[in-house]
Length: 98
Image 1 (cartoon, rainbow, N blue to C red):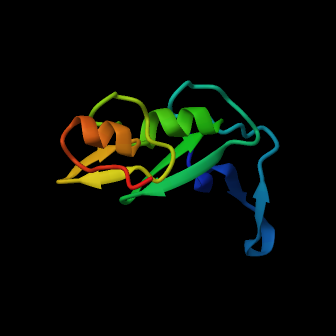
Image 2 (cartoon, rainbow, N blue to C red; image 1 turned 60 degrees about the vertical axis):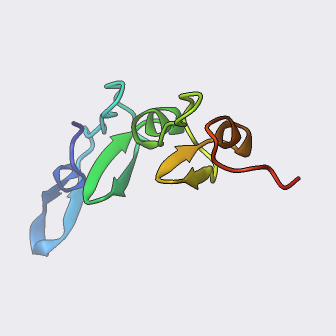
């Protein structure tokens, strides 16, 4: 896992926090060190990413029909997640109302 945000700072005088100049967050997926990395917390678990690509790879649910990552709203039918109405229909879930 990457370095926590707390490790990014060193205690300084008068109780202030001073940012370390040598700190580079590390992506939990690809291991890339990047100064513009970001963190996402989901279900009490915090992960560090260098790109949305890595965040999606690690955290996005997978369609129960086609196995693609669901990066939009998706559809939930009977506890299964689908990327679209087409995939849900293939699994006997729902019909597209379009």
